[in-house]
View 1 (cartoon, rainbow, N blue to C red):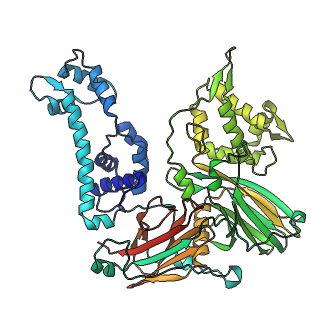
View 2 (view 1 turned 180 degrees about the horizontal axis):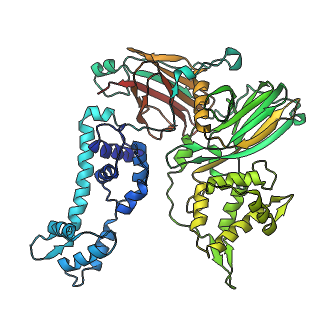
View 3 (view 1 turned 180 degrees about the vertical axis):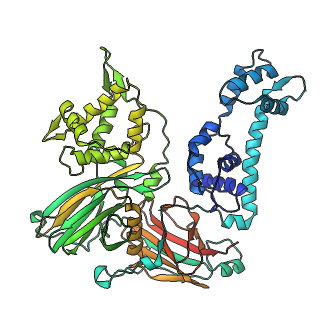
Length: 606
C-alpha cells in the first residue's frame, strides 16, 4: 500500500525510536537518549539544540514529543555542507590541513577538544598525510545517516512484534478513575444513538496470522457516514428567540507544543429555572466575503457542567450535540444555579492545519523617512484580528479583565489597576476601556521600547497562534450565544487550572452515556464505547481490571478520515480502573462519504 508523506514521516519516527527503546510507550529520561534517537533518524543535533529541546527541569519526553522535535530538527543540506568545507579549503585541492581544521573546531561554534578533533580527522585522513579529504568525509557522513535510517526501518519491518508496537502516546487524554465517573441519569441525556457496528472474528485490516488474531482478540467497528451531513433538522429554533435574553461570548482554541488544546472557560449563573437555547460556531475574521477564515472548518462544541472551579470533579449537564452547518446546538431547561461552560474541539482539523510550512518571515515594523517606527500593514491586520479575539463580549472595546486574559496568554502576567490607569492616560480609550486604535498604539510603544527589535513582538504573536508569515495556524477562534427565555443570566470568562481535566472528564461521560459498551473477546474487563455524532465519531476505552492494559488501534481501513491522534496506527495505555478517550475521527472532505473502520487489539504485557 502506498504511504502518504505523513505516514512515511511517522514510520521514520517509530523506526528511529524503536532502534533505541523496546517500545514507543517508553519515555526518554535523558538528553543523551534524545540525542541517540535523533541520530538514528538521521539528524545531528547541536548541543544548543539539545538544550532547547531538553530545558532545565525536564525529567522525561515521550514518543509524541520526539515526533514534534524531529519536525523541527532538519537535516543538513548536502550543498550547504560542501560550501562550508570548501570555505576552508584555501588551496582548492579538496583537502583541509589538520592545523586549519583544529583552529576552526576549537575556536568557533561548539568548541571541540584537541582529542575530539584528532578523532574527527582520523576518519577522513585516508592517506595519513596530515590532510583531511573533506569530500570523502562528506560522503562518509551522508552514507552513515542513510545507513542509520535504512537499518532502523529494516529492523521495524522485519520484527513483527515491534511493528505491532509502533504507536504513539498522546498525553492530552488524561485517564479518569472509574469510581469517579457516575453515568448520567436518563432524564439528563438525549436518546442513545446506536452506532452501525459489526464485530468480526477475522478482520481484513489485519495482516497477522489467524492464530495471532484470535489470541489478541480484536474488536472491529465500522461506521459509514454520508456526504454533506452538515444539516440537522431535529432542533427547531424557538419562534420568539429574538425576544429572549441573550449573551454573546468569544474565545479561541490554542494548540500548545505538547499537543494539548487550551481555551478559556466561562462561569454561568442562572437566577431561576428557565428554557435555554445554546449555539457555538467558528468566528469568521476575514473581511473578504468569498474567502472565509481558514479555521471555519474546525469543529466546536460547548460542554455545560456543574462543579467547583478549584476541583477536577464535575457533573456533565449537557453539550451542543446537534449541528446546523457550522453551528452546534443544544436546547433544554436549566435549573437555577452556577455552571461552567467548557469550549471543546476534537483537534482533528486544528492539528492538521499546523503542518503547513512557513517559507518567509513577515516584517512587523518599518522606519518612516523621518526615522520614526511604524507598524506594517500586515502586522496591523494581525493585531486587529487579535483584538477581535480578546474582545470577549464583542463590544469593540477591551476591559481590564479582557486585556488581562491576553496578558496571561502572552506573558504569564497581569496588568494591575495602576498600570491600567497609565494605559488609559497614554492610549486611545472610550468608557475607560481600550479601543482598537489604543491596542495598536500599545504595541507600537512596545516596538519603540525595543528600538525596533521585533523579538518580543514575535513572542506575543506566537503565543496567540501565529506563524512567521502572520497566519494563525495554531489557534482557532469561535463564539457562542447563550439565550435564556425568562431571565437574564450572568456570563463571565474565567481561567481554570483544572479546566482541561474537567473538560476531558465531561467528554468521556458524554461518550459513555450515549454509546454501547462492547468488551474485547477474552478481556471482559476492557470495554470500548464508540459514539456516532452529527459530524464526528469518538471512542472511549474503559479498563475495569486491576492492571494496566495496552490497546493497539488500527484505522488503516478507514476512508476519507482524520483522527485527533494524527496517525492511523497507534496505541493507548490505560491504567487500572480508569477510562480514557481513545480518539475522535472526522471526515477529511465532508462533501464525500467517509467510513470509520477501527480495529482495537489488546497487546500482551512483555
